[in-house]
Image (cartoon, rainbow, N blue to C red):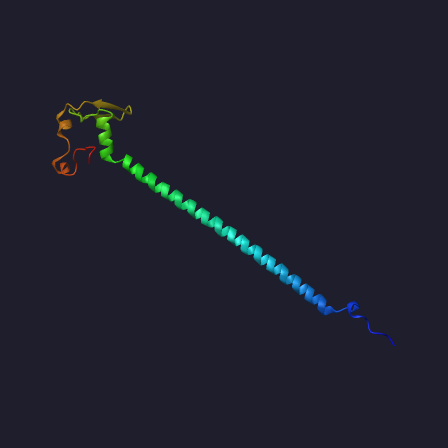
Length: 135
């Protein structure tokens, strides 16, 4: 009669299955942890990009306000009067261009005729006024 094999020498498939299962759980846990860390990294980068976008938007708004203040008619008028010593024109003349269709040129007329001094018609004077930098 043969003696039974010692316990440490037995080939048991159940222990091999447990080892493989534990190895699979360990790999799954490590994968899940790495995916979580990568997700946190991406979230941090997204928050950083959002902050930069908001900062650039605020800078753009400030620049738009500054640009609008530089182009305001009152500022241009005051700058022209004080810095450039500009004054309102007193004698304004209208120059009419007479086109010569045969030669394709235009001649300037000083506007001494009565048609040049007539200006716009009575009806159009209601809609057409004089331009001023303060307006």
